[in-house]
Image (cartoon, rainbow, N blue to C red):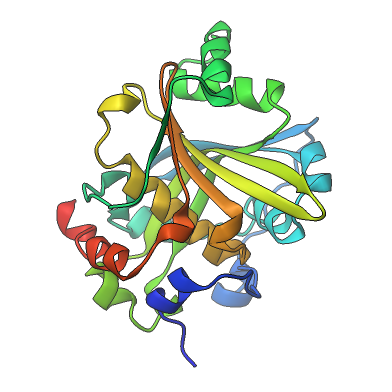
Length: 256
């Protein structure tokens, strides 16, 4: 049975995953150069723009194995050509999704964002915030996580998204919350200055959840999405997705 976007959105359990490999899928690529690093490994991807992908390796020891494997393998097995060619960037989707959104003015993520103002060693506010989270928040495991979904991975991809271009994006902050008895929650966060005024951030972060679930096999039930700044935080659960969500996603590429 071929995989469809509709069936994928409605599944309730983790799914098996064949981890992406440039060598297996595209033939032999020039091997990457191993570099020494302490707790945090960093790599700059040129994906139409530069994104500094960082992973806190010691924190991977106690997280879901499929997620850990994806994060570590992404240094060598990221399809950079897909990011460079695609025009389907999640951050450019001006499409509204009708999902329940929770608003907070007091939240752990807000407090950490405020504290991150002391980090000023880098040029950009985004990168300073990300560096602070990696160094000071025990739940943050990675930043600027590259994610993608290709049209050949779903039989109805072009019908659902109105394009055969690959979907691409980079997660600002990826957090992992252990809940006991092997249960866990993966949090996908996007930093949005002026978060309260955002209209379409939900769509962007939802598509991140879609791609992360695809790449790792982790169920939507174990994923929480959100966006935030130093004043407000908004969260939602991607498992709310239904047929109406799918209809709204059909407008995603047309809005770019």
